[in-house]
Amino acid sequence: KMFHPTTGDYRLENAEKSDFSRGQSAIIDDLLEGKENGFFVDIGAGDGETNSVSLYFERERKWHGVLVEADETKHRLSIAKNRRSELWNFRIQFDNKIDTDLDNVVRPDQLFEMLNHDVIDLLIVNLKGSELDIISHIDFTKYNIKVITIERSEE
Image (cartoon, rainbow, N blue to C red):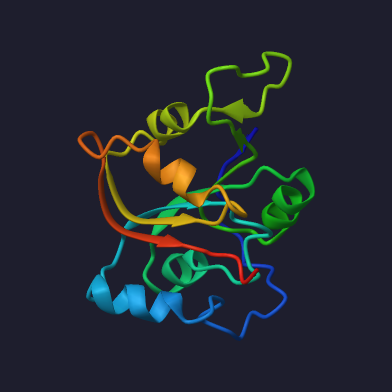
Protein backbone atom coordinates (compact mmCIF):
# COMPACT_ATOMS: atom_id res chain seq x y z
CA LYS A 1 0.00 0.00 0.00
CA MET A 2 1.43 3.32 -1.05
CA PHE A 3 0.32 6.78 -0.01
CA HIS A 4 1.54 9.78 -1.97
CA PRO A 5 2.86 13.01 -0.42
CA THR A 6 0.57 15.85 0.52
CA THR A 7 0.94 19.61 0.27
CA GLY A 8 -1.04 20.84 3.29
CA ASP A 9 0.40 21.88 6.62
CA TYR A 10 2.20 19.31 8.74
CA ARG A 11 0.06 17.93 11.56
CA LEU A 12 2.70 17.08 14.13
CA GLU A 13 2.37 16.61 17.87
CA ASN A 14 5.51 18.70 18.42
CA ALA A 15 5.48 21.10 15.47
CA GLU A 16 7.87 23.53 17.20
CA LYS A 17 10.71 20.99 17.13
CA SER A 18 13.06 20.83 14.18
CA ASP A 19 15.09 17.72 15.11
CA PHE A 20 12.92 14.78 16.14
CA SER A 21 15.81 12.31 16.25
CA ARG A 22 18.07 11.55 19.17
CA GLY A 23 20.80 13.72 17.70
CA GLN A 24 21.48 11.70 14.55
CA SER A 25 19.99 14.32 12.20
CA ALA A 26 22.51 17.00 13.25
CA ILE A 27 25.45 14.63 12.76
CA ILE A 28 24.17 13.47 9.37
CA ASP A 29 23.49 17.08 8.32
CA ASP A 30 27.13 17.89 9.11
CA LEU A 31 28.36 14.83 7.18
CA LEU A 32 26.32 15.88 4.15
CA GLU A 33 27.33 19.54 4.55
CA GLY A 34 23.75 20.85 4.79
CA LYS A 35 22.74 19.33 1.46
CA GLU A 36 19.41 20.59 0.13
CA ASN A 37 16.88 18.63 -1.96
CA GLY A 38 18.28 15.19 -1.17
CA PHE A 39 16.60 11.80 -1.20
CA PHE A 40 16.09 9.50 1.79
CA VAL A 41 14.69 6.06 2.49
CA ASP A 42 13.39 5.48 6.03
CA ILE A 43 12.80 1.76 6.67
CA GLY A 44 10.94 1.19 9.92
CA ALA A 45 9.65 4.77 9.92
CA GLY A 46 7.18 4.29 12.77
CA ASP A 47 4.57 7.03 13.08
CA GLY A 48 6.58 9.45 10.93
CA GLU A 49 7.41 11.78 13.82
CA THR A 50 8.57 10.07 17.03
CA ASN A 51 12.41 9.82 16.95
CA SER A 52 12.30 10.47 13.19
CA VAL A 53 15.62 11.17 11.51
CA SER A 54 14.05 11.85 8.10
CA LEU A 55 11.59 14.51 9.26
CA TYR A 56 14.39 17.03 9.87
CA PHE A 57 15.66 16.65 6.30
CA GLU A 58 12.17 16.84 4.84
CA ARG A 59 11.25 20.03 6.72
CA GLU A 60 14.56 21.86 7.05
CA ARG A 61 16.47 20.77 3.92
CA LYS A 62 13.54 20.25 1.50
CA TRP A 63 14.34 16.58 0.94
CA HIS A 64 11.88 14.01 -0.32
CA GLY A 65 11.88 10.30 0.11
CA VAL A 66 10.07 7.15 1.12
CA LEU A 67 8.95 6.10 4.59
CA VAL A 68 8.45 2.34 4.84
CA GLU A 69 6.48 0.98 7.80
CA ALA A 70 5.14 -2.57 8.21
CA ASP A 71 2.78 -1.83 11.09
CA GLU A 72 -0.60 -0.72 9.71
CA THR A 73 -1.44 1.41 12.77
CA LYS A 74 1.87 3.29 12.65
CA HIS A 75 1.51 3.68 8.88
CA ARG A 76 -1.92 5.32 9.37
CA LEU A 77 -0.46 7.60 12.05
CA SER A 78 2.27 8.71 9.64
CA ILE A 79 -0.34 9.50 6.98
CA ALA A 80 -2.11 11.73 9.52
CA LYS A 81 1.15 13.71 10.04
CA ASN A 82 0.87 15.06 6.47
CA ARG A 83 4.44 14.20 5.50
CA ARG A 84 5.77 15.39 2.12
CA SER A 85 7.20 11.99 1.21
CA GLU A 86 5.86 8.68 -0.04
CA LEU A 87 4.45 6.47 2.73
CA TRP A 88 4.64 2.75 2.02
CA ASN A 89 3.03 0.05 4.13
CA PHE A 90 5.22 -2.99 3.38
CA ARG A 91 6.72 -5.77 5.43
CA ILE A 92 10.18 -6.84 4.28
CA GLN A 93 10.83 -10.54 3.93
CA PHE A 94 14.40 -11.76 3.61
CA ASP A 95 13.87 -15.17 2.00
CA ASN A 96 12.30 -16.05 -1.34
CA LYS A 97 9.28 -17.72 0.24
CA ILE A 98 7.00 -14.71 0.07
CA ASP A 99 3.43 -15.41 1.08
CA THR A 100 1.47 -14.63 -2.07
CA ASP A 101 -1.69 -14.13 -0.01
CA LEU A 102 -0.22 -10.94 1.44
CA ASP A 103 -0.05 -7.90 -0.83
CA ASN A 104 2.17 -5.86 1.47
CA VAL A 105 5.23 -8.15 1.60
CA VAL A 106 8.36 -7.39 -0.44
CA ARG A 107 11.92 -8.64 -0.60
CA PRO A 108 14.68 -6.03 -0.11
CA ASP A 109 15.67 -6.15 -3.79
CA GLN A 110 12.05 -5.47 -4.80
CA LEU A 111 11.82 -2.57 -2.37
CA PHE A 112 14.94 -0.90 -3.75
CA GLU A 113 13.78 -1.41 -7.35
CA MET A 114 10.46 0.25 -6.48
CA LEU A 115 12.33 3.35 -5.27
CA ASN A 116 13.44 4.16 -8.81
CA HIS A 117 16.52 5.95 -7.42
CA ASP A 118 20.08 4.73 -7.72
CA VAL A 119 21.46 7.55 -5.55
CA ILE A 120 20.19 7.60 -1.97
CA ASP A 121 21.60 10.37 0.20
CA LEU A 122 20.38 8.82 3.45
CA LEU A 123 19.21 5.32 4.33
CA ILE A 124 17.64 4.99 7.78
CA VAL A 125 17.11 1.45 9.05
CA ASN A 126 15.14 0.62 12.19
CA LEU A 127 13.90 -2.96 11.99
CA LYS A 128 14.01 -4.09 15.62
CA GLY A 129 16.87 -6.54 15.18
CA SER A 130 16.85 -7.15 11.41
CA GLU A 131 18.93 -4.11 10.45
CA LEU A 132 21.94 -6.12 9.30
CA ASP A 133 19.66 -8.37 7.25
CA ILE A 134 18.52 -5.42 5.14
CA ILE A 135 22.06 -4.04 4.80
CA SER A 136 23.38 -7.42 3.65
CA HIS A 137 20.70 -7.56 0.93
CA ILE A 138 21.59 -4.21 -0.66
CA ASP A 139 23.37 -4.37 -4.01
CA PHE A 140 25.96 -1.64 -3.47
CA THR A 141 27.10 -1.95 -7.09
CA LYS A 142 23.62 -0.78 -8.12
CA TYR A 143 22.89 1.84 -5.44
CA ASN A 144 25.06 4.74 -4.33
CA ILE A 145 24.13 5.33 -0.69
CA LYS A 146 25.89 8.31 0.90
CA VAL A 147 24.99 7.75 4.59
CA ILE A 148 23.40 4.82 6.41
CA THR A 149 22.11 5.15 9.96
CA ILE A 150 21.07 2.06 11.88
CA GLU A 151 18.88 2.23 14.95
CA ARG A 152 20.01 -0.30 17.50
CA SER A 153 18.07 -1.66 20.40
CA GLU A 154 19.17 -0.74 23.92
CA GLU A 155 18.50 -4.33 25.02
